[in-house]
Length: 328
Ligand SMILES: NC(=O)c1ccc[n+]([C@@H]2O[C@H](COP(=O)([O-])OP(=O)(O)OC[C@H]3O[C@@H](n4cnc5c(N)ncnc54)[C@H](O)[C@@H]3O)[C@@H](O)[C@H]2O)c1
Image 1 (tube, rainbow, N blue to C red):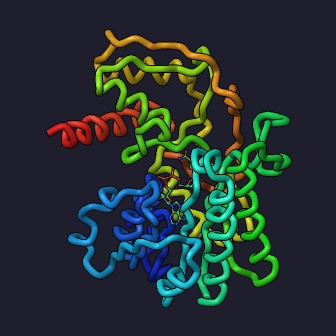
Image 2 (cartoon, rainbow, N blue to C red):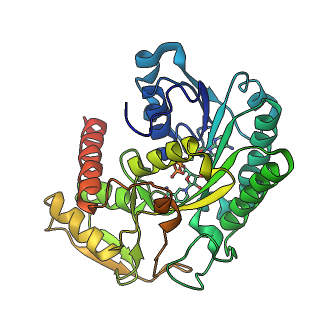
Image 3 (cartoon, rainbow, N blue to C red):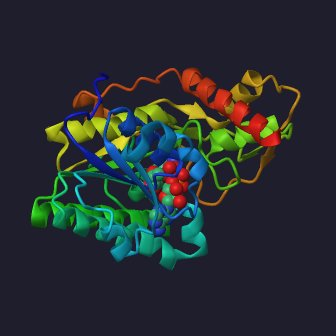
């Protein structure tokens, strides 16, 4: 049994955003631990193919539900017997620009619905996913969890509202919560269209034999974190009682420039004949990322993918076979 296994600790989990990139990895990992798992997703960004094969493999232990987290009654009908919630669903940056009111409804009201139901159904643990965007423009580096929160995007504001509701339910009702702030997660199954993550966008573009586009000069730094480490963090805080009521930065601490990422992907995929095209910086793009993960590692969490090439190679292997399957 691996050290993050939740076997015996919890029986039935809800994973919101379960058909999404990170959520689908968590669903599979919990099923491997022997839990009953309900994936809740409205498929606005998630895909059923991310959960393919799980029903056959795990039978009644796995349930895939099409449900919008802003729909309280529909959500409620799934809460019987649930003892842990991993709340990964979100309206992303792209939605927030197009429809900030919808962004507010999903990230704030949707979170409120889940918290109310968790309280009413006696859920033992609520793991809430937030984002580094809640900090806004960094006032100091490395940015730690006590850094002021001054989000500058609708997305950051709505995610912070979600965090505040989580804290309120902890203070008012003693709901056992932990907040996880993610930064630049990458890995298999990540969206690779233009609204996806940069690793999967570059991989897809190169596999299509097209030139890669970098916005800016490529010197911007990202702290890429492999999805399996993120799955492990979710399970780690669900196990460790000291994580109750706490918020943690979930960044590997690796520093990778976008230029290095592009070069590595072209080299690994043997596509060095392709060019890199440089376009204007995107407005609001953050050039430097230096995030402290000390609070999490001090608690005893160990990142496994600290060699960037290891996670990158696994991702590229997956992308290669995924696009081959799509083309055939
Ligand atoms: N990927 C990253 O680098 C990153 C960085 C910071 C924070 N996060 C956070 O991680 C979480 C997961 O992100 P992801 O990268 O897996 O994105 P994703 O888009 O793949 O997953 C989000 C899922 O939520 C679902 N969803 C959206 N609105 C919904 C609704 N109203 N009801 C039910 N489901 C809904 C989508 O269909 C999708 O499957 C999010 O909370 C996000 O804010 C991710």
